[in-house]
Image (tube, rainbow, N blue to C red; front, side, top):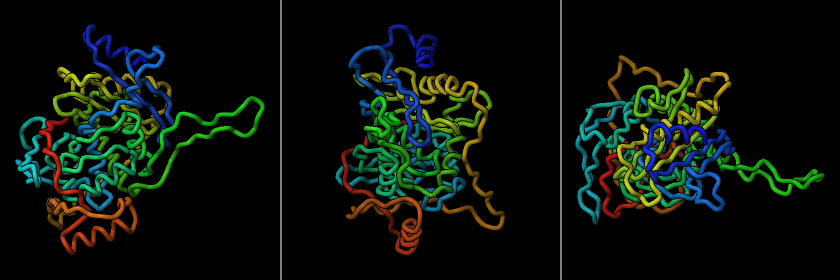
Length: 370
């Protein structure tokens, strides 16, 4: 509450009706703090941390790269940021744009995430298959219906701040999903057996631990070098991701230290666009003010991250991931990690196919997203 109040008093005009919410949790999903809005002492108030379904924007992108890393992609694989269009059956041509409206050419996956480039994110999503990306996001805890078209990669889907923070907790803990919980146990005075337990905690593995550690490495670059630099405090290793949705209606910053995961959402209840606010701005500052208070007095701990092996001088760079045919598939979701992914990748290499999402979709919005 103090961190949120400080930012609104010092960085936002007094007449602003913009709202914000914060969730802080441990990597097993234990919710340590939650702020549902600027007015916290109102009975029956709308809790924006748990009740508001909002588009996630680029805060969704880590799940794309989680799917790719779990399939064997490297943070140093090269993809070309260039003009790019897809033909969507029933909707026509869709050409995503970067937030800056320019192109960087060949970039590593790490740099693509660090700078929140949209076109590489869509290319990677199309390459690994939308169904695979959706399965990873769902298994990490994003429960809402995910967009079926290519705009899935740009955060066209909605989620709550509690879900998003819990999903990021799965990245920090090494790739296992969590169910957020706020209760350790409830028992009657004098009774030894609890009436109610936690109802949450760590669940099944979604991606392999190596993939999770490489993703943490990529997300650390977002804060140390990329769009999330305003979140920095002290000398602490931090990782996270910014997100700003179409027309600036929602701004997010979700990230973690080795100790805690925190998510911040900012926007208007009536979807009025934010003026001059992106996820790397005020939400990152609210996150910094919150997390710096949370970490006061805690010793420095390194993030559980794994840097990629340096590219060999004896071989050429990996070819750019190519979009796979997006054909509807029946059957269940594909789990992350283990033999299923190896088999899937071998089949893709042989037949040129892959896990895929549905074909026709509604016209995709032109997300200009950071």
